[in-house]
Image 1 (spheres, helix red, strand yellow):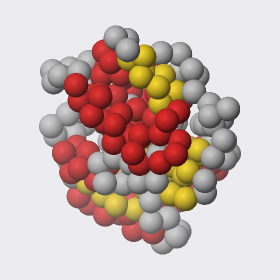
Image 2: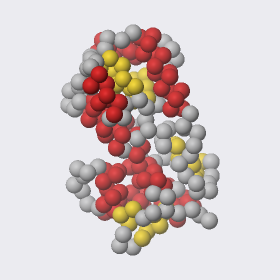
Image 3: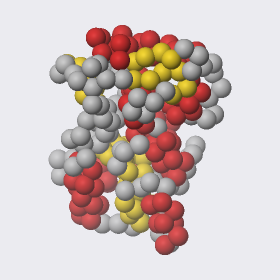
Amino acid sequence: MIYILEDDESIRKLVTYALESQALPSRGFACPSEFWAAMGEDLPDLVLLDIMLPEEDGLSVLNKLRAAPSTRSLPVIMLTAKSTEYDKVVGLDSGADDYIAKPFGMMELVSRVKAVLRRTGESRQSALSHIDGLSVDPQRHIVTVDGEPVTLTLKEFALLCELLRADGAVLGRDALLNRVWGYDYTGESRTVDVHIGTLRQKLGRLGECIETVRGVGYRIHGNE
């Protein structure tokens, strides 16, 4: 599935038609709030992102995608009328995988979408976890325990990814809050404990791999 965040309805419909005519399922959104709501339900394989949007600009959306563990490696192609060399450099340096200036041809767009999907698809086969029985695919947002799929919320998934990336190091509650909920989060650190509890339950026998380090935070270790 490809998500298209573009406030121009005619462009959005045209891009959707072009992609679906090439067997690339897509879904369009007119504003970031609709886009974020959909992201909370299911993650796409790629995002086509305009820069000049209502509510918040595309670069802000891109920065949030790159900051969240669950979408850090999600392929993003910028589609924008900002076509100067400086604009392209800013977009690419912010984490975009490609940058297409308007106006653009539909054949070129489809070709570049396929190229990005091919490149990023090569990295999907490696699981994030080295724990026996646990497989985590950050790109596709898939977790399995002993081959059985486990359904996690975005926050639970992000917590699991952060703990695995720490490779056995202890992560404090404040660090987890910043990485998963964001620096502007104003709630209580207790929310980390609650999410860790539900994460342990959902992981079943492997939940015991998440260790509480009293007075500090949490770490994840192998089940050797």
